[in-house]
Image (cartoon, rainbow, N blue to C red; front, side, top):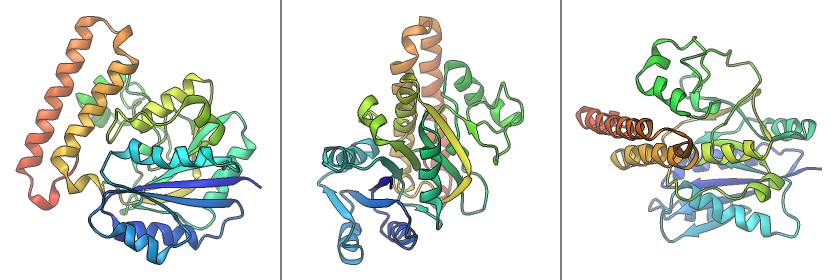
Length: 299
């Protein structure tokens, strides 16, 4: 029987975390699971809630908020060091709800497709719409350009312009993708050992794309599996610090481009890309300031 370790990085989302953990513990999956919660120095008694209400959960409390990759890596290192380490690991956001059977279905999919290194389900937002981040292409200079100037939004059904979020594809179409999202991402433990942990240069955003990029470099396929649905509130942590979250988002864009594309991109185009990212960051910060406080968000 396959085994699965679930890793949930939490920052001040106690009530959502409680609902997430309840959905998992009520599932009673066939696969053997362990649940790891890493609390990133929350001040809302999240850690105390986990200790009291979910004593079977393995809790790691960080003395400081080191970011998404940092928190997940604390658990991933511990999982991989275990003598009876899990066959699969899943990154799962605390603002998700996992329906009954979803974990088994995703593990079953991986068991049936040994060439797949990672997969992710269909993620639905509270209004029932698709979380577009759950299936993505890598933000190459061309793909990022079409997205940043708005052509992907103007022509969401046109493959050339809408490659980043693949909006030209039916959301119920199983397909190989460049990346799924770290809010719910199932990865073989052997693949994690092969490609390494999340890159902690990314504080929030981008680390899942970077991980997927490295997984693909090692020859593994990544699949979007819409036959499985998970529910996602989204931005539960980032909305607490929207200005800083905007900066982290655009920093992630810079880090990803510099790490994977800058060396093969002409210098002039690199300069244009860096300038474009900075302009978009300033526009996002400015538009966020004129929103009412309740409507402010990460980007």
